[in-house]
Every structure is written in structure tokens, then in C-alpha cells.
Image (tube, rainbow, N blue to C red; front, top):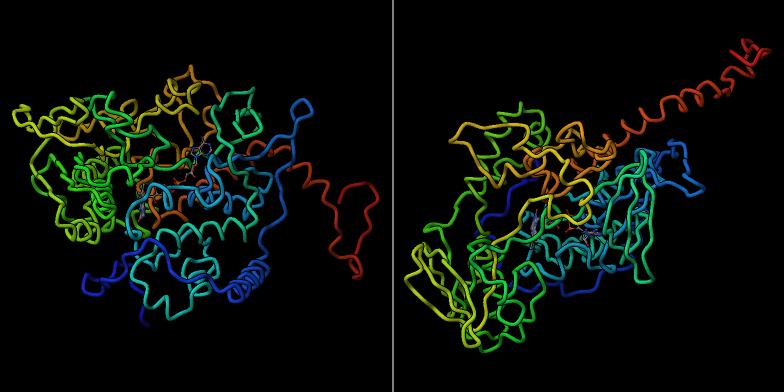
Length: 508
Ligand SMILES: Cc1cc2nc3c(=O)[nH]c(=O)nc-3n(C[C@H](O)[C@H](O)[C@H](O)COP(=O)(O)OP(=O)(O)OC[C@H]3O[C@@H](n4cnc5c(N)ncnc54)[C@H](O)[C@@H]3O)c2cc1C
């Protein structure tokens, strides 16, 4: 038997013409409807979803949600779907963005295609008709699938939107959670909507808030904040590239995002782009790909703390390489220049330009019309507005484990130390008990659970893990009520047979 490869296609199969950011043809609506009928049939065959089993509760006449999922990107979808498929259907899902703009894919992601192989199934809950491939083949045909090299950003976004719809997720867009507060054994969410501020009560919250959701974007201390917004931008935020036409762009950072922003600026008419990279050699091997698959997805969290930390440090040191497609895209531009082994010492404003001082001693000076800072994301829960009432009480890795000096990695030590179901854990006994009702299912989970809550390959594992943990917690909370319900359950199985004994005392 031949199994489909989970690996990326070889460089040789990379077509030179897949350079647009959108699939060019419209989806075939008739075939999509047929797929949706197949999804309904598959769910029927699997008896999904089961009935809701969690007893409904109210507080002061206000209905309480079993779970509120914050974020409707792929991780939010994976969590919400897994909850519903476990009979936890009294949930709400909130996303700050309008429909079709959840996550980075069609707004700030500037690559041509995803880096992941097209064969990844996506958050499909093990159901073939919910896979990316099923959706793509229905939308564009099997020939288009065969010809597809890697997934277009737009296709991935559309697929996720389709999942939201066919799973009938209870999603409210343009609903930004600004604060999560303890509320006597529950959580109160403050939600900003176009029509005003609302509150919502929940027994549990899943924060599927994305790459920036555990601390935001990194602005290195050597970059003068006064450069923003007219002379500088952070790479993961919206940038008006039309404004950069004919101008000279400096970029700090050597990751995929810096490359993509340089290429995008040049493709849109910038005069030149100079990328300043501290490293003298770019990372070569993608250890994330090397560790993708069931072993690390399910095993990482089971490792003893010191071994997990050793792995965290190993992955941190290896760093992820830039996809070769991204590098080639930038190199196709004659005005792209990369300066390896060139750390930026400072970036400041002078005479309407950006002045960069380069090298550790800042001896060399260059000028640009605009600066793009591509230094990525930070994990620091003190900076997460939604968690302001809990942050000081949340356990971080540095609270739970002191590594030997050679394995100290301060950036990673700031990651939260999460429980087996992505729950926040208390730093000490002074933490509000409601802290453990929050599940952090974003990049901040990396040190505790590996890559499953941040990248596409492990998304279904993370969704199921968080939903299973929520189920277990709710079951324990409701054990008394569920037992009473069980005792009251009295459908006589043997009625109609000679062995039927009618009950006379209210008990069997
Ligand atoms: C540019 C870029 C390219 C990437 N490419 C790949 C790739 O090719 N392959 C791969 O495996 N991974 C990739 N990743 C990593 C990862 O897969 C993505 O970051 C992905 O978007 C993570 O999904 P998510 O659901 O966790 O978060 P997101 O898709 O970011 O969704 C989070 C959602 O939460 C919402 N939200 C956040 N805060 C709030 C709030 N307070 N209230 C309400 N809503 C809120 C946001 O509006 C957003 O829609 C990439 C990441 C980036 C940034």
C-alpha cells in the first residue's frame, strides 16, 4: 500500500508560475453543495454531534455559556468543533475581525502560498469530507488539485470560512474581548461590538487568539518608536505598499516575514530593499518539520519537565528557516539586497529619513526612506490586555523550572507553564481560582505542548486536547447533577419481553 507523503514536494516540482496570491477560478457551487451533502451524511453516520449533556446554568437570571472560544481562526474552529462533537454545544465564538478576515491569511500574510504541504488535512476532526483536499477538489476539480503546488492564502481562508459555515459554529464577528474577569467561580468577558460594550458569562474560556495573542509584536529597544507610523511599520501589521513606490526600504530581521515584505515592496514598485540580518548564516534545517507527526504531537507534553525544556532549548536554537520559495521570490527582484552578519545598532529619524547604525558598535550608517521591522512576536502575558486581571498570578516556565546555565533561554522561560489541557496554572496560592478556567491555545502554548497550537500540522490534535480537558473539568463540576440525572433515567429496556418487571417503588 502506498501512503500519501506528509512531506513538502521537492524543489523540482515547484512550478514557476504559481506566484499569485489567489486561486484564479471561482469555486464550483454545484460540487460544493454535493460535498456539503456528503458532510451531512458523514456526520449522520458518526452520530455527530451528540446531544448536549452539560446542565444549563444561570447567574442572576443570565444564561452562562459552557465555553466561550475567543478567535475564529483555525485553532478556534478546531476547539469549537471538537467541543460540539463532545456534546458541549452551549458555546459562543467571538472574533474581533469581520467575516473572511480571521487570522493573517488575507490581510497581513504577504507570502504567495502557505509554507505547509497541501496534503495536510486541516482541522477536519478525522472526517474526510471536512479536509482541505475535499474542499479544494470540490471547489476547483481534481485536476486543479493535482496541479496545485502549495495552498494559496485565499484558498486557506475560504476553506476555514467554509468550515465555520458547515459546522454551524455559533460565531459572532466584530466582537473583541477586551477583558476576562473572575466572577465567583465563573469568567466574565467584556466584549466590544460595533453597537457597544457587552458582557458575557462563561464557565470556561479558550483563547485561540493567534500568533500575537500571547504578548504581541516585538519592537526591539534599539528602534526609536518615534519612527512610527510615517517612517516605519511592523511587518505583521497592515502596510500601505503603494506609498512606498520609488522609495528605498530598509528591513530588520531575517525571517520569512522580512523576506516577504521586501519582495512585496519591490513588486509594488519600491526602488530598493535592503535587509539587515544579525546572523551570518540563515537557518538551514526545519526542525519543526522534522518533529511534525504523532510522536511529538502527543508525546511532547508527556515529557518530564527537564526533558521538555531541553527540547524547547534545542528547537529555539535551531530556529525555523525561511521557505525556499520565499527566498527565491525575493531574489527574483534585482533591487533586493541582503546583508548577513549585520546587526542593527540603532534606528532613528533624521531629516525625513530613517538612519540605521549597523554593526555591534554602530560604526556604519545607512539611510532609508522607510523601515520595516520584521523581528516577530513576543510571549509575555503581562502584555495581554484580556488577561490583565490574571497576569501576575500565571505560572511561567521560569517559576516552575530552573535549567542548568547552558540551557537558559530567557525568551522561552517567559512562556506560560500550562496544564495538560492548555489551562493556565497558578504561580502560587494567591491566584484567583478562576485562573484555571482559561485555556491558552495559541503560540504561548509552545513550550508546554510543542507546535500543535500554533501551526497547521497539529491543529486537530490541539483542538481535541483542549476539548477533552474541558469535558473532564465540566464532568467533574457536574458529577453530582449528572449522577442524579442518571438515577432518574428510567427507560425500561425489557418492556415487551417476558422478563419485564414493572417498577413499583420508584427504584429498579
Ligand atoms: C504571516 C504568517 C504566515 C504563516 N504561515 C503558516 C504556514 O504556512 N503554515 C503553518 O503551519 N503555519 C503558518 N503560520 C502560523 C500559524 O498557522 C498562523 O499564525 C495561524 O493563523 C494560527 O491560527 P490561529 O487560529 O491560532 O490564529 P489566527 O489565525 O491568527 O486567528 C486568531 C483570531 O483571533 C482573533 N482575536 C484575537 N484576539 C481577539 C480578541 N481579544 N477578541 C476577539 N477576537 C480576537 C483574531 O481576530 C483572529 O481572527 C503563519 C503565521 C503567520 C503570521
